[in-house]
Amino acid sequence: MSGLEIERKFLVHKAGRPYAAQATSSSRIRQGYICSERGRTVRVRIRDGRGFITIKGPSDGKGMSRYEFEKEITLDEASHLMELCEPGIIDKTRYLVASGKHVFEVDEFYGENEGLVMAEVELQSEDEPFAKPDFIADEVTADRRFYNSSLRRSPFSAWRDSLPEEFR
Picture: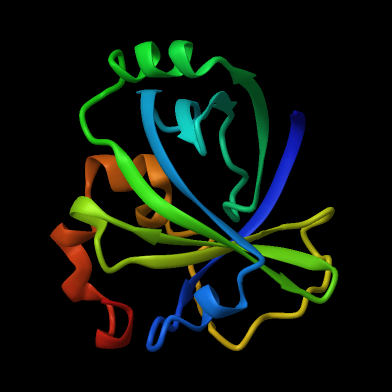
């Protein structure tokens, strides 16, 4: 897949984990970054026994849109590339939750990002309307702290106290 990625990110009300009960599927994801400079990232991901490499360009001013190229690679290739990654692996479970015509990807993080739960929705345009599930809370699309590449460098455990208690 390649092209323009348009997505919005949100914090999630995690009390009772309602997203898990509403999910149509879930998968464990481990990912590392070969390059995580601002404006470009190269990510290696292992998801459900499959490998992927993804290259992302700079985000627009609102943090919603950016170029993305993703290609499936072999699990062996992904495992070897993970060894080349910068320190800090992102480990999470992703839940897919249908809402109206869209699917929200809800990520529940582990390790140094334990306690963080975020959701994102991919859109066809920046102003496309969508129905939010009840567990969706504050939008954090433009807040770079919530980018996975940033969570690798500055994990949630280091700044979690800056958020309201319901999100920690």
